[in-house]
Amino acid sequence: MQSKDLEDGSSKKKVEQFSRRVFGRRLFKSENFTNLNAYLDILQALGEFGTFQRRLVALTFVPGLLSAFFVFDGPLMLETQPYHCYSDWLLTIQPNLTMRDLYNLSLPKRNDGSFEECLMYSPVQRDFDSIVKYGLNDTEECQKGWIYTQPEYWSITREFNLVCGKTSKLLEVRAIFITGILCGSLIIGTLCDRMGCYRTILTMMLSYAIFGFGTAFVPTFNVYKVFQFIVGMTVMCYKISSIILVSEWLVVSRRAHAVALEHCFYVLGLILFSTLTSIIPHWRLFRLVVGSPVFLLISYIWILPESPMWLLTKGKMEKAKGILCMAANVNKKVIPPELFQQLIKEEIHYGTILNILQRRPLRRTLMILFYVWFSIGLGYFGLISQGHRNKKKYGGYLTLGLLQLPVHLSCIILSEKLGRKNSQILTLFLGGFTSLFTVFVPNDMNSLELTLIILNQIGLTAAITMSFIYTVELFPIFLRQVALGFLSLTYSFSAIAILLIETVKQDQPEFTMMICGSLTMSGGFLTFLLPKKWEGKLPEEKSESPKENDDQKN
Image (cartoon, rainbow, N blue to C red; front, side):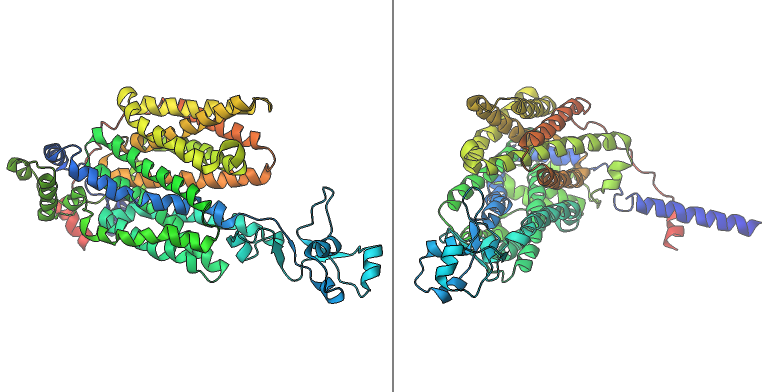
C-alpha cells in the first residue's frame, strides 16, 4: 500500500513537472523584471529621443525601403501581358506573309474581334489559296508557345510562360509568399529571445542579400517560389525585430514617433517602387536595382546596437552598461552612477504564447486584438487589390504611397491628443464606414466614390500604425514580441482570405468592400472592451523548495 502511494506521488510529481514545461514556466521563470524600473530611469537620464535614438530609428528603418519592394513586386513580376499562340506553320506554305495576315489566318477570334489567347487553328495540308478562300475550322491548344504583344516588357509570367493552363501558378506564388510571412510570425519570438534583436536583424539583412537580391538569378520557376517563401519570412521577421529593438531603447512617450517613422520609410519604398516600375521593364533588372542597396547594410555589423534590455535579461551586465554609456555620450548626457548600482544580475527568458493564453486578462486582450488586426489587414489588402485592378481610376500604388506618408506622421499627434485607444477606435470606424458606404454609391458619382476611397485609405493606413503603437503597450515587456508575432499572423490570414474572396467573387468588388467594411466596423466596437494600457503585474511563480529541486534533478 505504501509503495502504491509512493508511485502515485511520483506520477503526480511527473505530471506537475510536465505541466510546468508545457505551459511555458520552464521558459519563463520570472515575469516581473527586477531591473525594469532602474532601466526606465536610465533611459530617461540618457535622453528620451536624443541623437542616438534618432540615429537608431534611421538605421533600423532604412531597410523598410527594401521591404516595400519585396512585398509589392508581385504585380510587376507576375503581371500577365496580352499574348496569343505562336503559329508559324502557314509560313511553310506562304513564306511572304505579313505578321498581320498570319495572325488573321491562323488564330481564331472572339466575338469582340480579339484573338483567342490559348487556341490556334490546326495545321492542314492544303494550298494557300484554298485556306484563304474557305478558311480553317478545327482548333487546338498552342503547340509552339506564345507571342507577347509588348516585346519591351519582360515579366516572370512571360519568361516562364505562366499562361493558359498555368495561370494558377500566379496565385500559388502569392500564397507561398504569404505562407513565408506566416512562418516568420511564428519564429520571430524565439529568434529574438535566443539571438537578440541585433543578431536577428543582421540575419535578416543577410537573407535579403541572398534571397532578395539573388532572385534576379533564379534559373527556374520552382527556385523562384522557394526564394519568395524565404523573402516573405524575412520581411515579417525584420519588421517585428526592428520594432522590438527600437521600443526597448525608447520610453513610452516616444514609441509612437518610432513606429510612425518606421511606416514612413516603408511608404517611401512604396513610392520609389511605383517610380521604378515605370522605368525598368525587365523583372530581373528591376530586382538587381532594388536589391543592390542591401549590400550597403553590411556596415550595420559595426554601428547597430544591441538592446540593453536583452543583455540585462541574459545577465550580461557589463555589456549593457557599456552600450548605455555609449548612448549617453552620443546624446551628451551623464547617467548617475547610483542608477547603475540599482541593477542586479539576473537571467530570465522571454515568454511564450502559452503564457498569454493561460491568463484570462491577457487571453481576452489577445483574442480581441487578433480580430481587430485581421479586420484591418483584410480591409488594407482589399484596398490594394482594388487599387491594382483600377490603377487609372484610383491612382495605383503611387497615389497610395503619397497619401500614406502624411497619415503616418499625423498618427503621432493623434495618439498624443486622443490617446492610443481612442485613436485606434476612430481609425477603425473611419476605415469601416467609408468601405461600407462605397458599396451604395451610384456608378455615375465618381467624385464621391473617389473621396470615399481616399478616406478609406486614410482610415486603414492610420489603423495599421495605431495597431502597432497600441498593441505594444497592452502586454508586459517580455510578452510583447511574442504577441506581435502572433498577431502578425492575421496579415497572412487576411491576405489569404482576400485571395479566396476574389477567386469566388471575381466580378463583384462591392462584395469584397462590404465584407471588409463590416469586419472593420465590428473591430472598432470590440476595441471599446480593451484597456488603455497594461497596468497590472502578473503574479510571480511560487518558488520551489530545495527538496523539490533535488527531486527534479534526480
